Every structure is written in structure tokens, then in C-alpha cells.
Image (tube, rainbow, N blue to C red; front, side, top):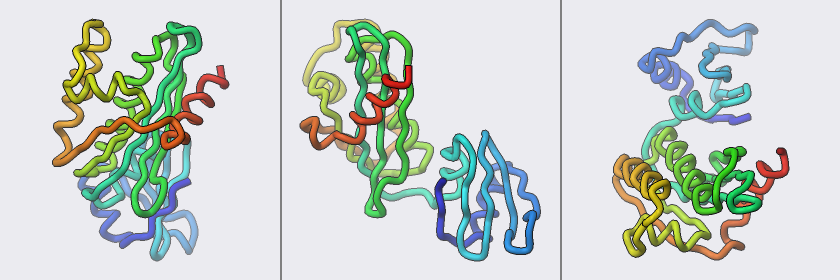
Length: 197
């Protein structure tokens, strides 16, 4: 449940500008509340609490855009191809801002890695970051995206195009290969998604 310490009047204006209906609070302590996409933001004097199953869209609208984030991604398949899952984490100087995981059906390890990268980039875009430092433990995916390796598989080529389109939405970005230990939280999330099936 995200808690944002902010100017709640400015946050209300951002929601209104984005077309989100803002209503009066339900108690004396609530300044206002607004709902979108399975989540509700409740404003108090100096903070906003976001409740619900998918707070990402509302949180992205409420956060002031810009800034730099570190993004970690991982995907995996049991069987290659087989049941696949992805995990991603967005980290700033404030700690973990957001993370996600899900099963993606049947895929290869490389397809799952690309899906994880795409999901991480979409989340970072939605949060409004303008500088990204992306890290993953798949050397193949990192080097394909950076243009150091060719991509012969048509499915992976299509996913690489999607990644490049998403990266154009950031002012600055880097992409680097890291050891699995450095990518441990994204790896845990991908495995949790697989274990849920």
C-alpha cells in the first residue's frame, strides 16, 4: 500500500488534469478520495494512501514526474519452453518504489527475459522517470538490445523493437548485464510468479 508524502492540493490538481474524478473524503480526517483502475487514493493533511489491487496508475499520476531510477528485471521458464514468469523492481534513493511479478504462460527463457524488461520499462514510464539505469542478468538480452548481438529469432526481434520503442521515452538510459546475485529481488519475484501456478 503506497504512502506518498506530498502537497495534497497539488496532487488533487494533477488527478483532475488527468480526468480522474475527485470526491469528498468519507471521514473528518480525509481531505478527498479518488479511484481509478482498481485502486483508491485517500488524501490526509500531508500524505496520500493508495489502497487496492493495482495502485500503479494512480501512484504514477500522483508522483511528480522526472528523476532517475534503477530498474532490475528477470524472467524464466521451467522447461524452456515451459511455464514462464517475470519479475521487476524499480529502485530510487528512497528505496524500492515499485515491483511486480506475474506468470506469462508458455515461453522460452529468453522470451520471458524480454517480457520482464518490457514490463519494467512500462512501469518506469508510467511513473514518469526521465533517466533509467536498467540491469538484468541475461547477457544475451542485454547485448541484443544494445546491438552487440544479432537477433535471429523473429519473436525476440519483435520484443527487441518494443524495448527500443519504450527506451525512446526516456531522456537518458543505460542497460547493463549484472550477476544474478545483484539481481536477486527480480529473480525472487519471477520465481514466486512461477511457484503460484
